[in-house]
Length: 328
Ligand code: COA
Image (cartoon, rainbow, N blue to C red; front, side, top):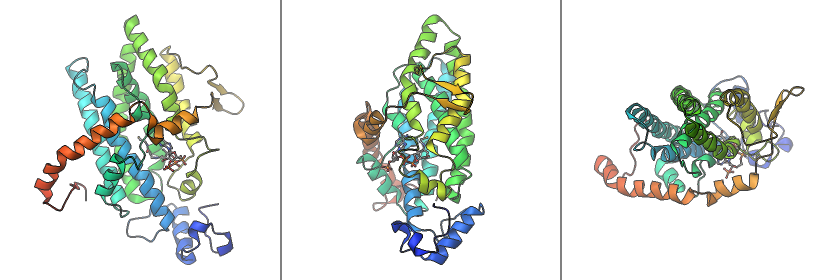
């Protein structure tokens, strides 16, 4: 089990074999005591590697996540909703800045992270590879995907790596506002004309499978959960996060008389757990590996932004520098 000192070299997994056992024991004791690990502290190579992978993917998700909703800024129904959506999209890009800065504290330059995104080497959240076809889609994204993000980020903000936790705390304040904005939009449509109700129902039906995927593969097939949970980077497993989300939001969705497209979705009174149709993990794998409905379009936009922004970065930072680091 990770999270326990590997003093006995025979008990250590291969990726910890060359780590100093005393330092490793001290590191794990600090984590078990609830202390934060800071960038200058000693950490095992695998802890650093896993954190970079996860924070970087999270940062990419924020910056790509601005795209499906961003397309609705020019078409938002009314001035107030346009202003609110613009503010939300700006917030999401700001979250990416915070997270890239947190990942940089672990030694990976921002330029390399952006290159890994636009060349398709790095992943980002599955959900942002689907189109926001109608205004109701943008409402469902703002309510339920931001709700899912809060479930994940609130838990992980109590984790072990200081810079990531502090970024998550700040992000959660803003996401709470997004969630209220999204809920307001969904309620408006769900209590509106029959056409508006149908529009939000259709959007919910489209988004439910990607939302179920959002929390990651089931615990039986999750690759990194054991390590990340042992070192308190992830504070709950993928299935636990999914259950928390279902507990909090399915009743709210049903309250609006909306139908979730899963006939097997129900809470088991004995286990106190939600039962649902197993999400299609093959579809999930396809989407996160580049073959979703919008992957090519999303990366093309990021590549264009990278190209078109080059002269600005050069003007500010000089010929050699590529990136502005506002929080460094
Ligand atoms: N979208 C895209 N990829 C996902 C994913 C999702 N919703 N959920 C899991 N994956 C990927 C993982 O990155 C991993 O791929 P990799 O080995 O190539 O990096 C693979 O699927 C196996 O998943 P798992 O072992 O369960 O990964 P994990 O332990 O890192 O858990 C998350 C996945 C998303 C729950 C976790 O990384 C996390 O909490 N990330 C921070 C929050 C975040 O990124 N939110 C998204 C935007 S708000």
